[in-house]
Image (cartoon, rainbow over all chains, first blue to last red; front, side, top):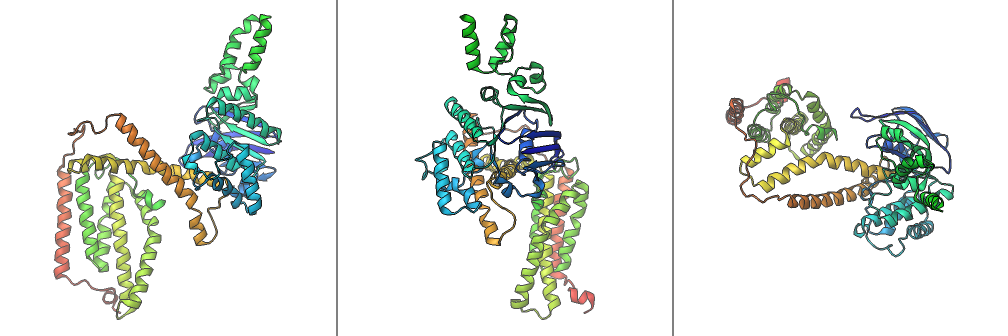
Amino acid sequence: MIKIEDLYHTYPNGVEALKGVSLEIQDGEFLAVMGQNGAGKTTLVKHINGLLKPTKGRVLVDDTDTTKLSVASLARKVGFVFQNPDHQLFSETVEDEISFALRNFGYDEKTVKERVDWALNLLDLAGYQKVSPFMLSGGERKRVALASVLAWDPKIVILDEPTIGQDSQQKERLRQFITQLNRQEKTVIIVTHDIEFVAECKPRMVLMAEGKILADGEARKVLTDPELASRASVVLPEISQIFLRLENLGFPRDVIDVYEAERLLLKRMG
Amino acid sequence: MSMFDGFRFRSVTSPIHQMDPRAKFIYVCVLFAVAVTFNQLIPLVVLFIIQIPFVLIANVQKEWIRSMKGSGMFAVIIFFMNLLSLYFYGGYGSFTAVVERSLAMTVRFIVLVESFSIFFLTTSPDLLGLALEQSRVPYELCFAFITAVRFVPVLAEEAQGIMDAQKARGLELEGGKFIKRIRNYIPILIPLIVNAIRRSLELAETMESRAWGATKNRTNLYVLKPGRKDYYLISSAFLILAVSVYALTYIQFPSLTQMLGI
C-alpha cells in the first residue's frame, strides 16, 4: 500500500510544487493522475520511488518511509517508466537494455535470460533482441523502455505519459496491457494528459491543480463534472461533453466511453 | 557543479555588466598572459587581489565565492602535484622554496579561474556573440558558440532526467570503488551524448527551414560601441602589462624565506 501524508515539496529554485497532498493507494489499484502542466503530477509520483524526498510530510510504501531507502532499493518494488525513453536507452542491443536493471539487482544469468525473453514477448518485441535500441521507431523505443522496467516484475508500476508518441493501435494495446497488469494484482499509476485514454480505461482518478488534489474518485464521476474540469484546466472527453448536452433528452450524464454511448444510443433508437 | 555556477552569466545591472565584452576580453587575456609569465608568489597574489574590486562593483560576490570554493579541490590537487614533483625532481635547495613555488602555481590557477569567472559572470552569451561577430569572426562560428553556451542549462536538466531514469532501474551512483563509480556513469553519458547529437540535428533542420544563412551580410539590431569606461579598462590592462614587463625585467621579488627571515 502507498500512503502519502500531507506532502509538501519545494524545489531548490523555490517553486512549491506540492502543497499538502494526502493520498492512499491500495494494492492492486489502478490510478490515473491528471491535471494541467505544472500541477505537480510528476513531482507527486517521483516521491513514490524516492527520486524526490518530501520537504514536509511523508510517503510510505508498504509501511516503509521512502526517505529511509535509496532509489535503487525502492526500484525493486516500484517500477517507473519515464516519459522520454531516450533518457534511459544506452545499450548496444535491446536485449542488453532490458537486462540492465536485472543485472543491477543481481539476478543470475539464467534468470536474466528468462526475464528478458518474457518481457520481449510481453511487449511484442521478440525478434528485436539483437537490434540497437537507437535504430527503433519512437513507439518501439517506448516499448523497450517499458519492457526494461517490467522485466523485474515490480509490484507497483508508474507510467509517466505512456501514450505520448503512440498511434491509436498502440494506445489500444497499451490499454489492454495495463488492464492485464492490473488483473495480475499490480498497482498501476499513470500520469497523463490523454483524457480520452483515461475515459476508456476508467481507473480511479486524481485531479490536480497548483500542487493540490482537486478531486479523487471514479473516472466516471470526475470526468463528467464540468466545473471540476474547468478548475483543473482540462477538457472533458468528447463523449462526456455530448452526453452532458443530451441530459435534457433523458440520457444519463455520466457516460464517458464510446462503447457505453453506442449501447445507449442504439437502445434509444430501438 | 558549483565551480561551473561561477561561470554562468548573472543578469545584474552593474557598470561591469554594461561594459563592452571586447574590452573585458582584452583585460582577461592580459591577466592570463601576466599570470602565466610570473612564477613568484607575490605578483600572483597581487594579481588575485586587484580583481576583487571588479567582483564587488559587478555585484557577483556570491557566484564568485562559489567558483572559488568549487576550484578549491583542483587547487589542492595542483598544490600537492607541484609539491611532489618539485620536491623529487625540481632540484630546489630548501623545502620552503618548494612549498613557495607550489603555492605560486596554485595561486596562478586561482587567478586564471577568477579572471575568467568574472568575465563569464558579467557577459551575457548574446553580447559575447555580438562581440565576436563585430570582431569579424564568421557568423556561423558565432552562432555555434552562442548555441553551445545556451544549451548548457538544457543539457544539465537532461542529465538530471537521465540520472533519475537510470536510478529508477537500480543504478547506484553513490558509493562503490573508484573504477566502478566511473563505469556507472556510462549509462548517463551515452543517452546524454546521443540526445545532444539528435537535438543538434533537429536544430539544424529547424534553422534551415527558417531560412538560416539566406542573407550573406547580416545586420544587427544592437551595435557595440566602446565607451569611455571601456577605453579606461583597456588602458589599465596595458598598464598592468607594462608594469609586469618592467617588474619581470628589473625587480627581484623577495622569496617567502627572505620575507619570513628564515
